[in-house]
Amino acid sequence: MRTSLPTNVNRGPAEIRWPPVSSTGKTRGVALDIATIDPTDQPTLDAAYRIAATVEARESPDLPPLCRRRFEAPLRHPMPGIDTRWSVARLDGVPVGWFRVNLHLLDNTENASIELAVDPAYRRRGVGRALFAHARRLLREAGCKRVVGSAVTPLPDEPAGATPVGREFPGAAFAAALGARPALVDVRRRLDVTALDRDRLAALRAGARSAAAGYRTVRWHGHPPAEHLADLAYLEGRLLADAPLGDLEWEPERMDAERIQGMERALDARGVRRYSVAAVHGESGRLVAWSVLSLAANTTRHAWQQITIVDPAHRGRRLGLLCKAENLEHTLTYEPELNAVDTYNAAANSHMIAINEQLGFRPVAGSTEWQSTI
Ligand SMILES: CC(C)(COP(=O)(O)OP(=O)(O)OC[C@H]1O[C@@H](n2cnc3c(N)ncnc32)[C@H](O)[C@@H]1OP(=O)(O)O)[C@@H](O)C(=O)NCCC(=O)NCCS
Image (cartoon, rainbow, N blue to C red; front, side, top):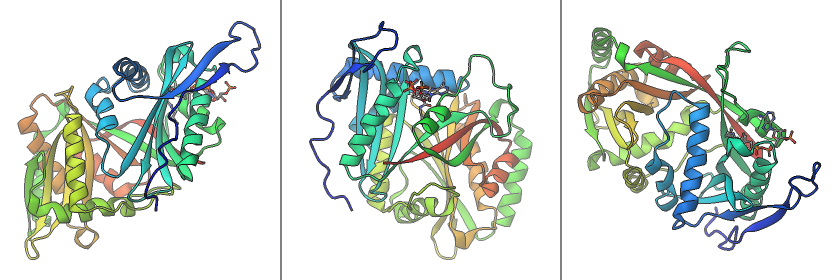
């Protein structure tokens, strides 16, 4: 296990002449430098945010604008056990791309995740390739063996040519060109809350309630009640053991009550509002199922369906559907302007997808996790 990370990695700017050999001569001698982002360097953070927000708006125009607070807070308030390193690429002093890598200190110590984006005005000039080479060097020096990044795609079964004009998905071609392998296919589904059939939701919830005799539900917003922290840590820690991960080499996370509390504080720093419904087994008093919806600080209209998990010993009693349906109603009482909820599922996660489809979620976009050996 990695106990301490080198402190000298990626400190100084890496400057190279760009491109090394120019085919046209026009860009000969332009300087590309890649440097660590200093958390107090607000202009550079502004530029990185602008690039990230532009890219997201182009690839996922149906999502609300990227939340500034949610984007930036992880630099100063990373999740517990995460060492996050951000870098910016400048062409002749102009920020044109950025990446952040997350190193994992508590589990998955040989794994890292990456987000990398290049300003659309500066693409196909090798900036992405140079950023990735820089990230790979940094990760190698930190002892990582593999890195995972996701790229938005059309839906897996979308017919060729169905993608609207102006939308393009360069991430897959880029990842493949850099030697990464597609490891997991995800689908984003959306619930149109404005078209929600409340009677049907109430009927689903009533059906789930009768299948779940012997369990009671509890709900909260914000921080979970202290008495449930240990059970929540157990469930959260199981998540990656249970969800289909395709070819991703990712181990279950080591969770405990303290880490859950640290995650809650990190979410507070991002300004994320969150709502939970959980099911408690009457006989044992254990919390055995849990579902969370969250909203970014910059929206009252859009939510993400986050974790939903049922302890394997308590499956088959519609606790997942019960928690999700109740949590939707619970959230709507606090967030009356909500009009869309999105969620990601592995394309192979048939149980969860069946629950989501029952609630009215429908596929809107794809996403692939790419894994690369360092
Ligand atoms: C993907 C992205 C980072 C590429 O940035 P870039 O600076 O244009 O990439 P590069 O110029 O270094 O391209 C490297 C290679 O990737 C491949 N590639 C990149 N964009 C491509 C595209 N639109 N179509 C086909 N191949 C592409 C090519 O093989 C390219 O080499 P070449 O230009 O010599 O043919 C950029 O398009 C982006 O920000 N996309 C949105 C975010 C994203 O998907 N990030 C990657 C997640 S894994």
